[in-house]
Amino acid sequence: CIRDSSFFANPLEKIRQYFKKSDVPYTLLKGHRNVVFAVAFSPDSRILASGGADDHIILWDVASRTIRQTFSGHGDTISSIAFSPDGKTIASASYDDTVILWDVVTGEKRRILKGHKDSLKSVAFSPDGMSVASAGRDNTIIIWDTESGKPVHRLSGHSGCVNAVAFSPDGKTLASGGRDLIINLWDTRTGKLVKSLTGHTAWVLSIAFSPDGKTLASGGADNVIRPVSYTH
Image 1 (tube, one colour):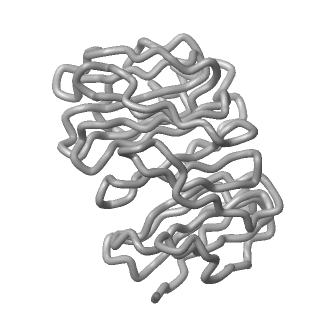
Image 2: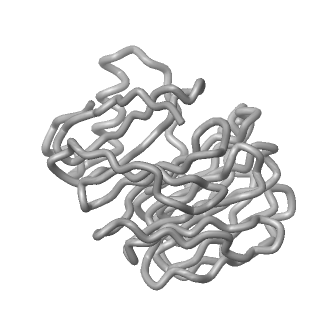
Image 3: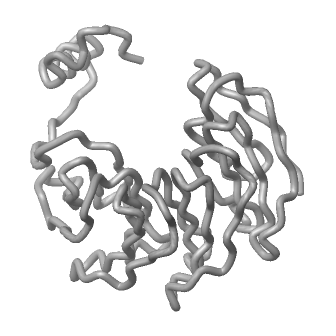
């Protein structure tokens, strides 16, 4: 973790110094014109997608470290990016209140998902690729059908901005966390709230399931990571 308070004064130079000291090979990928908020690798690790405050998504060729494509279509900052399990689609969430599903090969918009009433903070694909979950500052989570582009469930249970969503490996549970310091676990088939977890003393910022689905980890603004054993 980089703790230098002057990091943001000259970020590129600080990054060079950090990696030089650690002897870790690195490449700086230059293409964005503003802050980068989201990155995601394709399932085959050949493509890196990035997005941020310049409202663009850039697809990078991992092997050559060059730009493959640039996607434009959002009207505000891109806050979160996710690849579908088959690697053919990218979902991007934005401060323009929408999620866009992009064709990775052509760059065409497959769907524009509209239904949120405020800016979005997180997006995630289900393991089977048939659903996308999005969440943000309207305190709401929407689970969408990726084929029709229509909402399947609208989940209301948070009293503050929802910062993160994650599907369990079997796709049966969706975890969400936000500014109300709570982690909610939802049944993705019924849309019902299964359980609420407490313990963070500040905003929940990130959530991840372990590959076997038995552990849920959350990170918060309280400087704490909380791993929790989970069973259906």
